[in-house]
Image 1 (cartoon, rainbow, N blue to C red):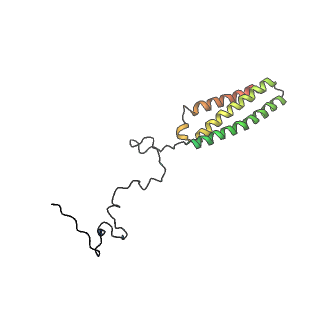
Image 2 (image 1 turned 180 degrees about the vertical axis):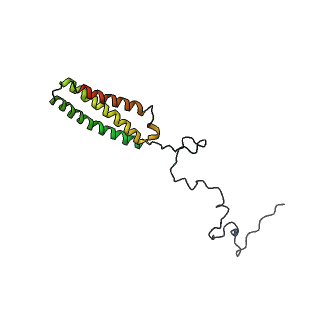
Image 3 (image 1 turned 135 degrees about the vertical axis):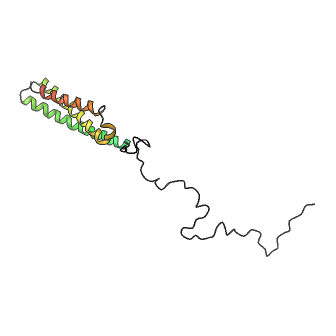
Amino acid sequence: MQATPSPSTPGTPSHQAPDTAADPGFKLPGQTTPDDAGPRTAPDTSHMPVEIAPGGATNPSAAPLRDTSGRDMAIAGAIIVVLLVIYFFVRNAYVHHLVVKRVSPSSAGSAGWLLFVGMSFLSAAAVLAIVNASKYLTLAITGPLVVVGVVTLVAALFVGRR
């Protein structure tokens, strides 16, 4: 036969008493419960920026690289565009100066464009070096920009003398 549960008497509660060992109701400073002793999901340094080292674990003495964000590159592009507008006005003033000095207008125009290109290349090299020197200040990137800039500036001076 099956035993039937006896109904609870009116004076006894039908639920179990809370386990005081699992939840003491208060904690002293430094006291941990089993829930607090578990592993943490986020380390203390999770809110700090991340540095990328060029050598990683193999070269800890190397200087950390700075990640170039899209915002930095957008600002650099805006600076270059502003400089190009300024250089265009400088080019026009240089052409006008050469024409006043009795240089032929075609030679003055060529010298002006060479001046514009030279200043543009040199400023592009400077802006890229400022944005992220460890990435862009290399012989492969900055070298051609500087060489073309210097050659066109020298050519502008020689073409403008004719």
